[in-house]
Amino acid sequence: MKLKLKIYKFYKLKQFLKNHSLFFIYHTNSLNSNNWKKLEKKLTKLNLNYYKIQNKLFIRLLKQSIFKNLILLINGPILIVFPKYKTIKKLNLKALLSLHNSLQLISFKLNNKFYLLSQMTNLKTFNYRQTVSIFKNLITNLNKISLYKLKKISEFSK
Image (cartoon, rainbow, N blue to C red; front, side):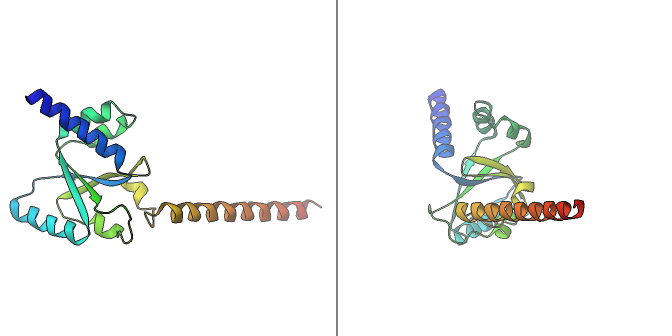
């Protein structure tokens, strides 16, 4: 029976990772019951759900995927936090970073890609279209600047 339960948990976790396009992976240190209640209240206030998983199960799943680099970051109990609803209207980055003192954000998944905390600080929103439009504007501005510099160089060479 234990073997079937482990296989079932593994399968459910695998399906969860495939079906959710946005979630956050937190490393939870020791949380007592009072701190856990406070954390649950904060999560419900932010319209977030959580999924607590075992360390070994998550490592086994990552070994079988292309995200083997994340294994080095995991060394304790894991908490996956995800939005309750599919549409994300107001998701505050500062609130997610400072959920609780004993929670440490390891990484997050956005549109089938895992990002680390250092990459997250550069993001302004989690909306895919806004992020792509900002990236497009950045590329067009960089192209304009480089063309402007080339024009200046060509004028000096005449």
